Length: 77
Image 1 (cartoon, rainbow, N blue to C red):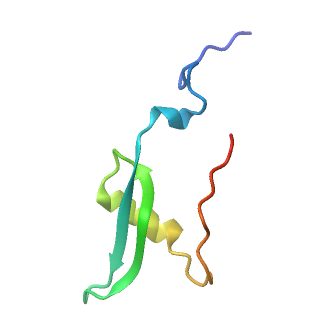
Image 2 (tube, one colour; image 1 turned 45 degrees about the horizontal axis):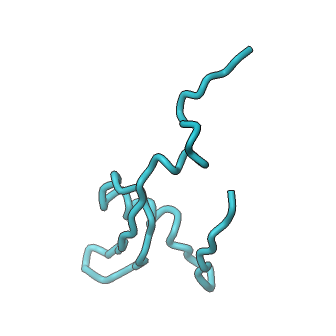
Image 3 (cartoon, helix red, strand yellow; image 1 turned 60 degrees about the horizontal axis):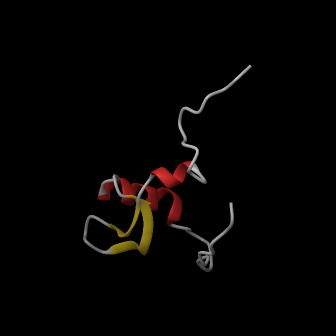
């Protein structure tokens, strides 16, 4: 049985090499305008809208109840 590449190319290290990312700022505010959440340098695919960025930040980055934020560290692989 032989499998051919479909979603990747031989010169990519990871499938993420095919995507471009950019840093954005995400803010979540209450209807009265008070700020609930703010995070700078959220890295998202450049094709995403600001609304998509805010939804991801609201669902996954808010960290309610977590005492401190983690520091980003580069990894191999």
